[in-house]
Length: 129
Image (cartoon, rainbow, N blue to C red; front, side, top):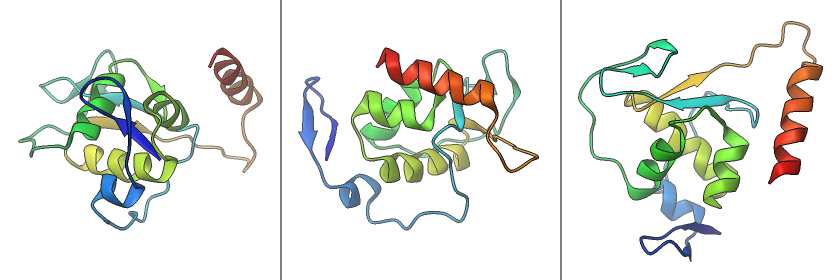
C-alpha cells in the first residue's frame, strides 16, 4: 500500500497505520460519492454552507485529501490519485467531514439502480486515468 510522502514519492504504509487503526464509521461512502473541500468559512466553493468550527490537527494524508478536493472529486478518484487504499480513504474522508474540512455529497438512487449518466461519467474518468 502506498501513501503520499513529503518528497513527492509514494511511501509504503499499511492502511492500518494511515487510519491509526480506527474502525470504519457506520456510514458507507460509495466509490462514486463526490467530495469537496470546505473553505475557511465552512462553505464548499459555490456549493453552499457546510459544517464550520474549530479544526483539530489533521495528518499529512488528510491534508493531501483536502488539497486534492478543492475540485469536486469522487472517493475512487481520491484513492487513485493519492495511491491510497480505498478503505483508508473512506475512513479519513469521514473524519474530515466530521471536522468540517470536507463536504460529502450523498448519491441518492431512488430506484436502487445507478444512474446511467453517472456510470458514463465514472467510465470516462477511469479512461482518463
